Structures are given as C-alpha cells and as structure tokens.
Image (cartoon, rainbow, N blue to C red; front, top):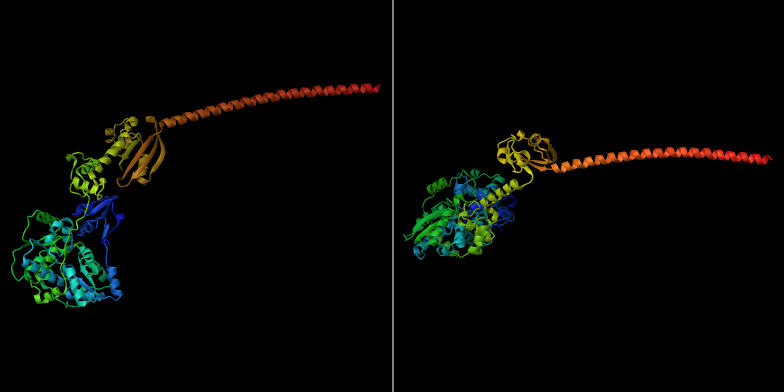
Length: 577
C-alpha cells in the first residue's frame, strides 16, 4: 500500500524532490516525479520540500475511527515526542483528551523504549558486536539495509520501541486488541507493515491527524481533566525523541561500564557520511544512536508547525525528565513475555549497471562529448552528469532533465527560427521598444537586427495595431497591412504574451501575391471591357440587320400587294366579256 500519495497533475519539470532526496529514490517519467518504493527509506524529505504539495501522506485516520465505531478495543501507543509537540498543562490532560475520542486506553511508547534500552544495555555488557547501531529509527534501518547492507551486522538485533510496545500491549490485553501508534514519523507506517513483525501495530497516526480530530470534536487538551498514565513509568526513556536521548537512556540503565565509545548522528547526510566511513572500516568499538531526522524525532516529517523549536524542546525535555532508569524487576517480566529479536538483511535495490560505453553514449546525447562538457551542476537532482546518465540508463531519469542542455537547445532553436525564418518576427514591449527582431527584417525595412534592437517600433512603421493588442490583450490573426513606402504587403499575426507583457508579431510577405492579384484584377477589367465592346457591336449589327429586314419586308409587301391587285384587275376584265 502506498504511504506517500502522489498527485501527478501538480508535478511538472521541478526536480526539487530529486535534488533533495539523498538516496535518489525518485524517478522522473514524462516530466513528473514518482517515488520508487523499493528504493525509498521514507525519510519524508520530499513531503516537506515539495513546492506544489504534489506529495501527501496517506492517513489512517478514517481507518482508526471505523475501528472505534465498530466496537473494537483500541489502544493508543503515543510516542514521547508528544511532550514537545502538544500543548497541555499536565501530561494527564493529553491522555484524557484522547480517551474522549473513544480509545480504550492511552499509553506511552516509552514503555516499549524501556524494554529496548534494557536490550541495548545487555548487548553492551556482552561486548560481542564490533559496533552497535541503534534500531529505533526505521528510516535509518532502511538506509543501511538498502544502501549499506554490509553494515547490517552492526544493527542491534532489537525491534524498535513502537514494535516492542505493540507486542507488550497485545501480550497483556490480548491479540484481538487494536494498537494505534501516534507519532511524528511516516516511516513507522511501513515498519508496522513489515512482515518480520506485522500484526503488532494496526494503524499509524501522526500528530496532525490527532489535532484535526480533536478540533472536529471540539476537544481542547488544556481544558481536559488530569488523568495520569496508570501503567509503567518509562522515566528516562521519554528522552528517545531528542538527540542523544537513546544514549542517555542506556547510560542511566547500565549497571556497569563497557568499552564502547558512544555518540549520536542525525540528519540524512550525516548518517550517510557515517555509513561510508564505517564501510571503509574507520569506525570501531562504538555504540551509535542514528536518526534520519535532523534534531531527532521532534522535527519529524509530519511536524509542520514552524513555531516548534527542536532546540527548545530538547532543553525542556532534558530539564524536566529525570535520568532515572526503569527497574529491572519491571522490565524483565515484559522482556521474558515477548520476543524482541529482529533480523536485519540485505534489501538493496537490484538496479542494472551500465557499461562505460553506455554511459558515454548517454552523455553524448546531451552534448557532453568530453569531460569538460560535464558541468556537474546538480540542477537535474543528481550530483554529477555521470550519475544522471546512469539514472537515465536505469529509467529513473530523462535526458531533458539536464537544464543547461535544454537551455542551449532552446537557445539554438530560438536562434534558428530568428535567423532562418522567411517571415519577419518582431517582439515589442509596452513602450513599443523592440525586444527582438529577426534578421530577415533588414531585407524589408532596411534595419539590421542590431539597429532595430536600439529602436522603437514607431520609428519605422505604424504601431497602432500593436498598441491595440497591448491595451486589449486580444490577438489579431490574418490581417493584411500594406507599407507603400517599403513597397511591402504583409499578412500579420499579432499575439499578446501575458507573462512578459509583450506583443509577438509575425509578418508574412505577400507582396508578390498582392501584385499578382492586382494584375489578375486588371485582366478581369480588360476582359469585361472587351466583352462590353463585343456586346455593343453585336447589338449594332443586330440593329442593322433588323433595319434591313424591315425594309425588305416592306418592299416585299408592297410588291406582292401590287401583284395581287393586278391579278384581281385582270380577272375582272375577262369576266366582263
């Protein structure tokens, strides 16, 4: 199940999470980041630094509410960091507030820490391990199992306080009881699902979840009654969330001195530097408290309140928590009842490794043909160009993540367009100052690019359309504009670019087309005139023919009439004889 939810629609060509992920557990596909679960150690850094909030933590809050509504017996195991993250007058008020939400009981994870401390003290007393690295931080454990598996032999073979407490609660109250861990860590969600100890923690909430729930129920912690915790007093083990807290707990619990040097390391970079040093064999005989969060659990990845100072919390907790151990007679029966042993193993990702030739080929695809071309700027998120090339080979990264290469490519494309386009390209600002001017403009306006970039548009053409586009933010497409003084006819497209508040114009030379159109029009006029003359002549001929036909018809009529009359007269004379 996913622990960090990814909203692809908000992520685009940023790479900030890649740059800030120390183990490079984020791949980029189609310009968007994706978390690789097998590589991720759930430090939560990407969650904290994402500028678009494209990554969010999947919450178990609804799951927990459903447990309570369905009548389940639900117990809270609350991390000791609550002492620095929640506002209260007495710690009993915190317990009372959570009980009002419907939990059967609220207990401190520090109870489990007391058992873990006792196991650490035993390992120190035995002195069999060359180095001992604490295993309270699941992100630190993942770091070693995945990226420095040769150091797993140094991990204390002990479960974390959260798992130890879950075991203790279920041993005491029954396996059917639901245990909900409450803390500032997101890696605990994955640890709860680990098959090596699955089933002891049924859900994981963070303090943001619980604060939201309390607000929804209108419960104010500082107004609740004081209901003190009635189970084991974890005493010094409440210091686990602050730096050196584990070491302090172990020192207070030990019965005798040991030969180990003790120190703490916190923060991803520092933890990785230490691991590298241990791989080189430079660290021996040490008990090391390792925590991936800088400043300890107090500033875990879900702690977003900027008013919380890890320095103040550390000072306050160290001042208020006595360095008193939990008595052996209290921890021994609990340790005997549960199995706190944990086996750590090599879980390193099995990524394909490219050959040197394949790396060089990928580098060449981004213009890096020799070592001097490798800027190693880190803009893509990888510290060196070679590491980025390896990531490309492993399909974790894309070629276009190289910012200098893409910049040069875009520059070359822009220059190519400006230099080779047959059309005039002009960009002007709100003052009609020419910001860009294609080289072909000199052919038409007699101004070189260098000259034009020092001029205003109105110095050689009418800017009225440009001004209209700037004022209205509306574009003009396919408008014919003639410049008789330059013997130039153009088809113009003017576009407003809001981001820069400029107008981009392209002029297409249609002078020949317009001249041809004029010639065609004149030919049409000549043809029409000729047709008119032919029609006129035809009409004249027709009229002449009609006149001649009229005269002939009249003459024929006269002749025939005379003939008929003569015939009639002849006929009359004969009849009289």
